[in-house]
Image 1: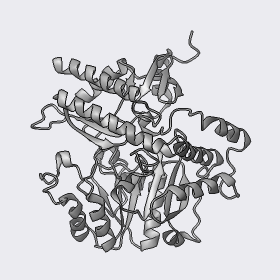
Image 2 (image 1 turned 90 degrees about the horizontal axis):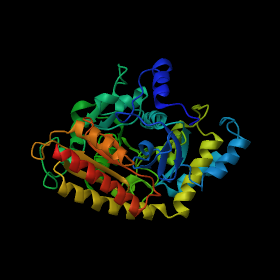
Image 3 (image 1 turned 180 degrees about the horizontal axis):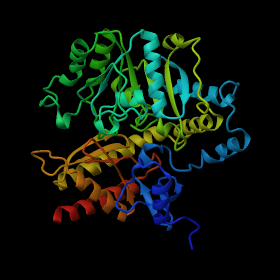
Image 4 (image 1 turned 180 degrees about the vertical axis):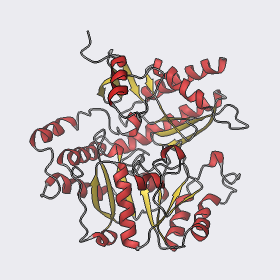
Length: 435
């Protein structure tokens, strides 16, 4: 007999005791009770391959043996004393991040989440530039606090009006569904030049900055063409703004071969936000910027009761150490190529797949009812997830229409695991296309 509550009991208690805003995957939600590297286990002992990395919050692997023992020691020694006192873990992590961060990024501030990191990045940009207007992308996601929701480019994440004023959204570099009706590369990267148009016609012309994800994760793993960020960075800086790069989902090796997604573009950010895989399952967020920009905040008191706590700081540092010691940057790059090939083969085989995009271990599979019309197949995405769950594979989804399957496994994934993911998707799609 299980020591765990049944899924039915949990459902009843959720309805009774939780504010009804929580979303669950699957027709029959799973009660997960254990994690082990790339695997998760439910209350019945069934094993699943986590091909979504728990919404991309897991990087190196669930309960990784290189991380857990040291964190158990830290938890038993000191959990929190706040940053009003000196502590070793926070400076050790800050130094470690500076070693791997792109460009001249040097000064960090740590938070509890990506949403808080977004808020603080915006505050830094405002103080440094003495301006308040921002540019953001449609289809983007930057968090759930008021400023973060204002920056989000999807209506499903924008509620609790009124928003923070001064945010202008520009078209996303969504080549599969080009908002200009053009085709890459003959388009001349028109979406990037739209940033100049938006600043000129929809703002005062004096912006604090632009925030952007190197790959738009919740937006459907929208992957910009390689020319996009160099063009955008030049435009933003010509107008006196700072380039804020949101690495909550793409950071710390997720895109393979590099520590951060923006590094694949050759562009150095002025401010960078971090979260998710940085903590490998522990609540954490952070901002890093240059020494010059950081000085604009000197003398202004900023406090977080739990941001910078010894447990989170130690775990994030151990995650970086694990990525280095296990050569996960190279492993993610190699496994990503294997995953790309497998998903592309599925695209050639199955009419429901309209597009496959991404890099490293961050891929999106866009499902459509008809390739010629590209009508979103949202119901198909839900069914595919359920069928793969029956085969022991947990997938995610994204995009406004909820029609993009997200394949983002932990870094410890193997070729055999990837083959299992692709085989399960293949079998499930074949069943779906028979109906």
